[in-house]
Amino acid sequence: MLRIDMHVHTKYSRDSNITIEELIEVAKKLGLNGVAITDHDTLKGYKKAKKYVTDDFLIIPGIEWKTDKGEILGYFVYEPPKSRDLYEAVDQIKEQGGLVGIPHPFDIFRRSVNKHIYEIIDKIDFIEVLNGRCSSSIFNEKALKFSKTHNIPGVAGSDAHRIEEVALAYIEVKDLKDIKKKKILNINGRILKKRDIFIDFIRYVASRFPR
Ligand SMILES: [Zn+2]
Image (cartoon, rainbow, N blue to C red; front, side, top):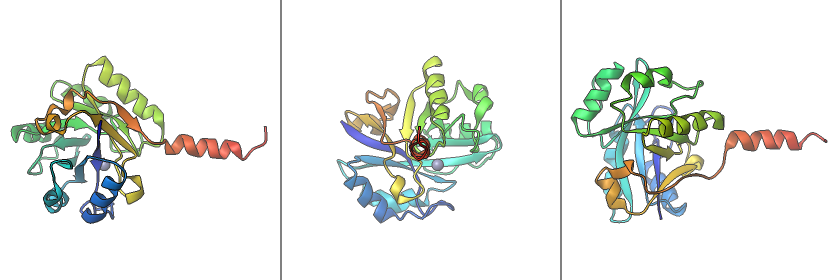
C-alpha cells in the first residue's frame, strides 16, 4: 500500500516553518509516497516543490483557502481562487478542474465550515475525516460519520505545520496513478493515523494520579 499525507503546510504558509527540502526528506523517511501541499492561500510552496515529483513520490498541488464561512481545501488547484465568498471560491476551484473538500469540518476551535457544509454538499468532492491537528478525536469522528451518511469520500492528512507532525495522518492507496487521475475519491485504501495527541495527553495526565 502507498501512503499519502493529504494535508501539509510549508513555510509559504504564514504559520508554518517547514522547508520544502525537509518536507520531502522527512516524508520519504517516514515511508510516505506522496503529500498534498495545501498551504494557506498560496501555491508558492507547491511550485517550489514540484521538481521533487518522481514516479514513486507524488506531490499534489493543493490549497487551504479561507472563505467567509470557514476554510475549504482544494486539490489539483493551480491558481488560488479569487473570491473569499464560500460559494464563489468553491466554483473557482471546480472551474479549473480542481477537487473541493472541507478540512476539519466540525472542529469548533478552527475556522471550520461547520453547518454551512449543507449549503455546498452537492459540490464537495471529499471531506477530511481525519485531521492530525484536531484537538479532540470527537471532531474527526463526527466528520467520518458525516462522510458515511452522505456518501462523500473521506481523506486524511496531518495538517502538519511543524516537521514533527508530517505523516500524523494519511491515506493508503494501491496505485498512485489513481490519485493522478483524481480518483482519490474512491479511496481503495484505509485512513490511518499514528497517534492522537489529545488522547495521549489525557492518558498522560491520568497516569500521574494514583487510582
Ligand atoms: Zn491546514
